[in-house]
Image (cartoon, rainbow, N blue to C red):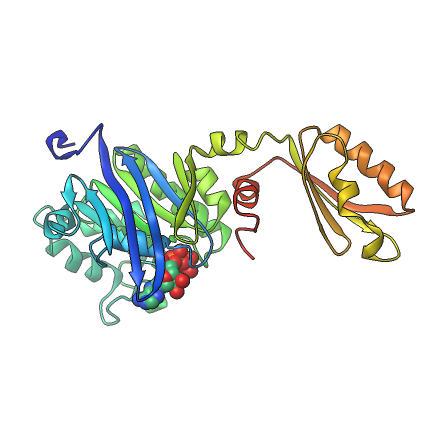
Length: 317
Ligand SMILES: Nc1ncnc2c1ncn2[C@@H]1O[C@H](COP(=O)(O)OP(=O)(O)OP(=O)(O)O)[C@@H](O)[C@H]1O
Ligand SMILES: [Mg+2]
């Protein structure tokens, strides 16, 4: 790591008061954060939150309206060529040259860099060694994403940018990609990824910035974000009763130790500080209105609950 390049305290990315306007629309509205060397940092937020805009400003693809951003010590508006040598970029969707095989694509990418890595070795790292002679349009979605990751890693970057690396992938492919991303961190590299999957952010990221409507609403480790909710569990259930109107939200809110109660038709959700108290309160209330409780589930709180409590809406509406 070239320490003289770091602006402060080992930050590989430093963003201050970043604003991006598209015409009159403000897509990024005063965002500040730092990414430390060696961490996987996540931007977690729903569609349209501004994640791609932020990551593309850091990649030098878009210009900020106001504010400052430094990557590996260089200003993104002044030194994008310097930055490009040392970052790896995977865009939200990748189009490959259709008449080159997987191996030929990596050979081409590798030739762009003086320190370009061995393409065969890269294929092995992303578990595509048996696909060397296959054209990208014949690869599965997960395999294409892994090829894109290999291309992003071909210059042995200090910092890797991944925009929604696992969107559209099946669970097996997602886990495979997570493994490759974790290996990248194990080699001392830093990663910035965007995602709208709370499980991905929770599993993979050392720290997460939760972003909504162009603003960071919380930033911390997943564990601390979840602990800050101060709830024991999230209970969901369905009430079997005559009509949804017989379920009173204020009655659910009045159940002891309830942090938040929600109702949607016959379905209810309670965030509680005490799972046992919540259940006995729910049963009592069901008795009171002559309802039966069905399909009750108890879940440990997740980043989804954090998002809900901070913004009042679900991560995926
Ligand atoms: N070139 C553009 N011109 C006008 N508006 C844009 C442009 N690019 C993005 N936007 C708007 O800015 C907002 C943020 O877009 P952005 O792509 O950064 O969101 P995102 O968080 O990456 O969303 P997703 O999860 O869907 O990828 C959206 O409302 C989008 O419509
Ligand atoms: Mg996006």
